[in-house]
Image 1 (cartoon, rainbow, N blue to C red):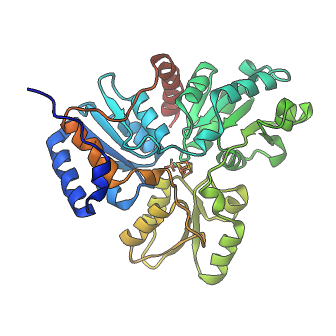
Image 2 (image 1 turned 90 degrees about the horizontal axis):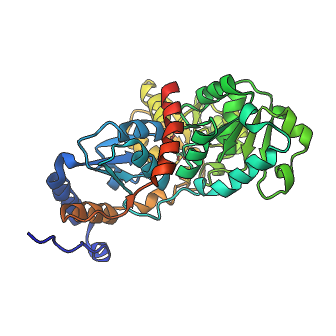
Image 3 (image 1 turned 180 degrees about the vertical axis):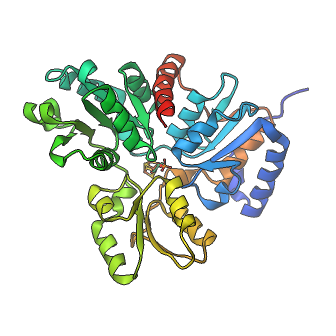
Length: 366
Ligand code: 13P
Ligand code: SF4
């Protein structure tokens, strides 16, 4: 039997959503258990609906390794998530990202040459291997996870960062945390570390990332200068405004928001934890939520007996997550049915082995 030709993507943009949805359903049914679709909570609604399993980064990382019967893991999320799925899944499983342009701008803010150079640079002052644990936020490239695996470090997600920092301090006295300075700072403050012992390494600022030798010696946590372009939009003034305008409002934010915003909030949590907090509240509760818009819109629809506001007056969407649309999902699934694997995400074996060490250290802690 000859293999049918690959399904082209462009013509799918001429179709109505209803047709695409129907075609996705048919392809999904044909693939059956051989394919599992994972969906991150920021995914646009029309795509999220097709996910077999949904979650925050930690939950999805665990789920990626728990469907051994699925030969294909179609990840409706961003690139680093599909990499984690590839690293943690079995050798015969294939992780797929429906649109390769679905990256994460924060993950792009730290790369292996830059972090390795910082490690050497700080090594002029500190005994790095003995005194500093590298922690990478899961929103990072696989080679940085491998770096952590090779240097006694680990990975964290937004739902376990405080616990992972605690673990790190049980190993060594200091932490180098990348790429998200906000998650690192919020978690360190949550552990009671004073702000003067949390410093930022600016990779473009010359020797010691612009820090003095004394600042480096005194630091407990050295943060990389990264941030999320979506979560930086939320400002302390937005919290003040909702507190004035909405009596009894509870402010719930993602820890990628700045310290100033997080300190004014009632609840800090990952996307899964934000949803759980809203779902657990009694009817009539009022919330203003500081995280990506698709998640907030979904909660508004799902919990009509609660008053749910978006914390920012402007639209904050993850434009890279948004790249996964019905067309790319349809194209991915129909090609699998036709015997063609499009957009496989395959982390090189040596890198994957070291990254797996770092991820497994995390999974053993939480
Ligand atoms: P969660 O782990 O909370 O789902 O966050 C992922 C993310 O990219 C937030 O911007
Ligand atoms: Fe990356 Fe921010 Fe999008 Fe999360 S919301 S995937 S951190 S760009």
